[in-house]
Length: 226
Ligand SMILES: NC(=O)c1ccc[n+]([C@@H]2O[C@H](COP(=O)([O-])OP(=O)(O)OC[C@H]3O[C@@H](n4cnc5c(N)ncnc54)[C@H](OP(=O)(O)O)[C@@H]3O)[C@@H](O)[C@H]2O)c1
Image (tube, rainbow, N blue to C red):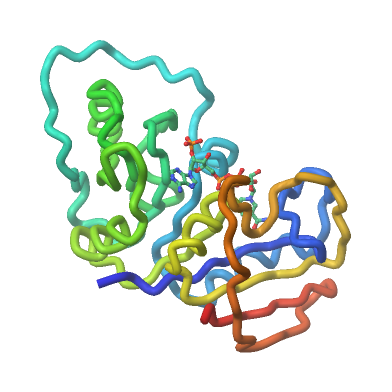
């Protein structure tokens, strides 16, 4: 069974998501509390976002390993109830520990990942699942997350590359966007959904569920993906 996927993001009025040039607008502080209203205990981000905000610096120094580890999914903590999921096909993230603020980390990998990296994850107490031989199949990944960890709902929290992969595969159920009162205007900056240049795709239709004006002139819009 596929978990229900809510894509929760914060952006400028022109849909840009890179916050560096925004100064420190007060509305930014609303991102987490509004996300918490969904009471969902699982969140997922792409490798770039995880590296920027949560994992250690690269390069990652891996110890040589002289054994074979089969490419089978690994549940490191069967008692975990809240999860941080990292999409890291090639095993690049330099994790320091097995959790982010109490959320157990699950790495989503391809089967091409090195044995040394699997040992690194096992030593840090991190769970991992395989999402495909060389490319990732997100539909299969969602079903595994449900089956192995009992995940029924998750918050997809960017960046734009990962969000676009989910949208393209028809896997987003709901979109929750906080529009901050600022215009970014940086050409080529990451946006809510960034399809790879070679992908031509029709626009996805949305149905508006609600619009709320919050503190600091932030607009919270919720859509159902049709
Ligand atoms: N405003 C907000 O609400 C918000 C939320 C989250 C993030 N952000 C910002 O967004 C920026 C990052 O966005 P981003 O789009 O560049 O990066 P991202 O989505 O965080 O990560 C992209 C990476 O994830 C992996 N990935 C994504 N789709 C994949 C697919 N279909 N198959 C295999 N791997 C896939 C790839 O990793 P590999 O390169 O390793 O293959 C890809 O480079 C950050 O600066 C972050 O701060 C903003």
